[in-house]
Length: 61
Image (cartoon, rainbow, N blue to C red; front, side, top):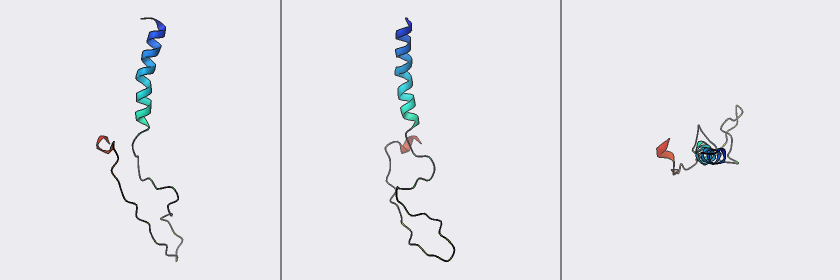
């Protein structure tokens, strides 16, 4: 096996691994523009509830 073939093989195996490590949800995420849940004392803000839709890769997590 030449160096060029070995390098291609490593790239072909590494790229899907790197892409898949960035998938999924980790921790509590907020939608962009969502209101903060921490409010100063004495103020009452209406809370927004987000609908939790299942994600394709959730069963793997």
